[in-house]
Picture 1 (tube, rainbow, N blue to C red):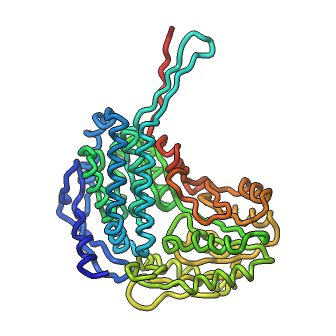
Picture 2 (picture 1 turned 180 degrees about the horizontal axis):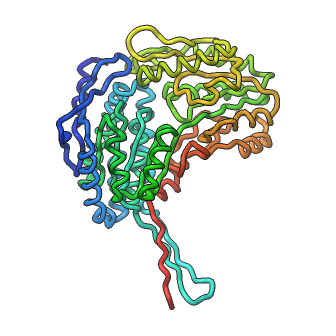
Picture 3 (picture 1 turned 180 degrees about the vertical axis):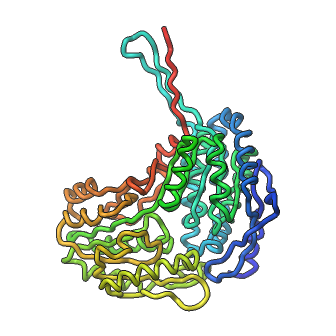
Length: 487
């Protein structure tokens, strides 16, 4: 990939705030750098919003709400459809932009653009399917009319690990429902969201419906908007710790919330599993997005009779993964997002080995520029190790043996999180028993990927509130109104 090609895709993106349909500088003129995690070099600078910029963005969203809510559902859907087509037409350059700011290999970035675009296509179709109801009162004396209306201006906060898809997963249903929004992307990866704003404007989205504020001071900019009272919903994807703080802030104005928070996914392999499928599923569940995913398999529990074979075969696959800059040919393991991420993974692996875990491959930071950590496999990981309780967010697969089905389920559920669990078995009865017993919002049964725009994504316990995607995803942006009619 030539330097001119890379600089070209960066230069093509707006670097200012997108407020009221216009590109504007931060009111105080400040900017902050966007850094390539593979090299540590600056790619560019973008506008650094202050609290007053955030208020201006909310002003624009509030001003546009009434007219946008009146727009015909078909028209809102057509905007999303056009945006879907533009995303797919520009998949190559958008993927390169994402790889430069986030680090994931180009092949994965291309996959994310397609995945992100699908949310727009899905919700383009859902826009015209917002339903209601009509019923006779039980006593026959009246009628019930049930209608659904947009919740109103929304606040959206997205993470750095899927910088385009986490945006479309929120923006799609908001637009389909008739809600305006202010969105704040992660400071590490603002370029993908800025590019998306330009695409939506090109697709015909009215001014003020989507407003993008990039900032290095997330809390300072967003808390005043949460407490303002004019926004009526907050949708957040990020850590459970930050989610708790946001819920406290939302309580002040009783904001409606939906949150996709942290995960600690168990990956269960029983001795009757198809081992080829289990290994392939493990690679997908662990190494998608370099392990920097809330759905990543965090703990591998393998029945004792097959644990040696599973560990050997997984190690062979992990050892063969090329590490490097995501723009390089055939690279599978790109850099982690920053040095803090590398330090955390290093600490977790050291804690596990200090407690008796064995390293089969990897296990130490890569020397040189950039924030690299190799694909790593650990065996004999004790249940008290930190990485069985904390989200790793890196390419580390810790393996622990188990003997019985009951033991496997107990270990899998021994966590405050409940986003996704993976189960590999050829026994149908066991598959159903275990799937029903696991405390998670999603189950990957004999497959390592669960994310799909047409399915409801979300967790239980401290992994979040509400669902994104699927036929229920738009409901998070709608209020149900009941009209009592006397006869």
